[in-house]
Length: 167
Image 1 (cartoon, rainbow, N blue to C red):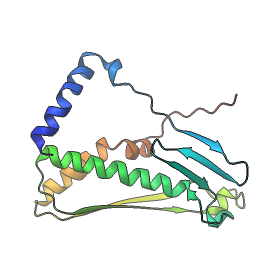
Image 2 (image 1 turned 90 degrees about the horizontal axis):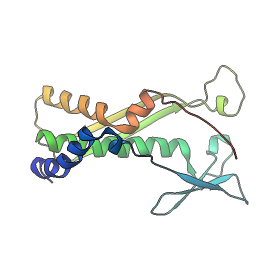
Image 3 (image 1 turned 45 degrees about the horizontal axis):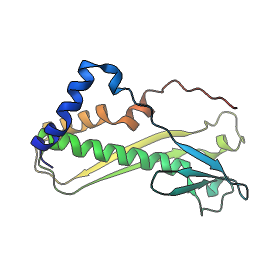
Image 4 (image 1 turned 135 degrees about the vertical axis):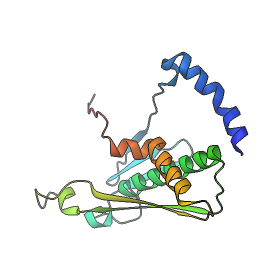
């Protein structure tokens, strides 16, 4: 896809959202079912069933997906798609590219071993490996716009309001 095709695809959507902001507000959903045989949750992805379980550092077998890994994978997916869309819109000359995310967890927090240990990632590092001859100022612009428009990055970076309930 080139910049013209991307613009043609997105212009009607942008126009509709400018005309009626309510059309742009869409609720995404995820659903999971607790496994009755093990400490796991079966997450419906729309394509397949993903079974998430305990990380081996918390006693898991390592056979199930780790939700921390899934969070990093969601960040990589979103940042990669966003980078590609921004590069396309900017007509940025990009060859091969990869996206990597890594994060540091102190499992003492998750296991309740140390009250001062945080539950969750202490730090997440997102890295792009870009094959390009573009000048550094264009690379910087690409990264700035990718960061700005990546939904998962912005959600992690700007904590949303969270509510929890039970029926």
